[in-house]
Length: 385
Image (cartoon, rainbow, N blue to C red; front, side):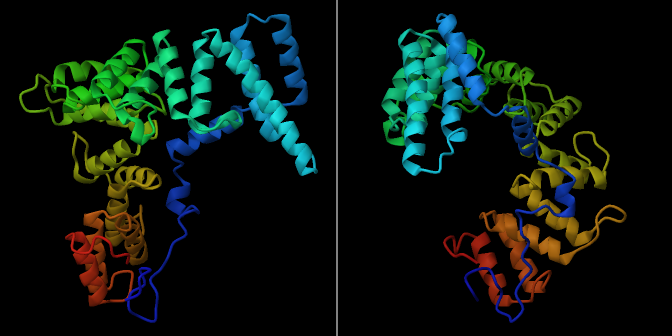
């Protein structure tokens, strides 16, 4: 058998180009793609005129910190988009000029204690923007400085750094207790990712904390109330708690409410909730009636974002087909299972073993079947089929 996934036969298995849309995928744009498209549409390209106007406005009102930071960010954009001189040396010089001017403004604002500028400069040190060398320690110091001034997002980043530690690039020593303290501080200041993170820490008893479903639910519900496309996770977790309440907790099972929350998260593009809805409509769970169309719809949404559970579920749907909704296709069944299996999903690896053994969507090969079954059982974890 070949190592690239081709069974031992003259006829190779079908291969789908997953970077192009299949008919099913083209009908459902993922929440992530929709968000990116919205950002592209709302983003206005920087112009020389805008830069000059902002420079003049900042000069006229030097105390307007927000406007000066905006100028700095637009200068950083200009260094990338406005420099198009054919001479490489001239291009480099002009880009450096824009970057230096941007850095000058940001550094000045940060030194004056403007927390938004401190946060932005910390990001630059963390990622190498503005031509700066990546410096996790300096990034941490700026995040912590802004956090102490009450900047919520900086408090969250400070917590992340404390949780990561120096070896993982956090720029400070690993300190779970401090991480929890900063997550709590950020959550109290209104940072939604911190509310979710703190909720999960308390729910699962992480970072040395004692598990507390009650307090976890408070923070997760607060995060769920503020959910958006970037922060849909808490909706799903609260839904899970109402779907299957933890033993001994005061949470009362409420399938209807759980379904509402899963739907909210799914509509925000959260693939895990989309896959859960696919399963609910496939098997008639959460008070739903069995609905093949809705099941395939939500599985397709989740699979388009790479959810392995949904990919395997779609494989099953293509294997059987659904009259008037989805045409049966052994080829599609094979391809979806293989896509999930290539990311070491044991159930999909087992399905690939069966497909290879029987010859579904690919030439029959007992050798390939044995290898896939072996991977599913953990016997060949490093073998690339």
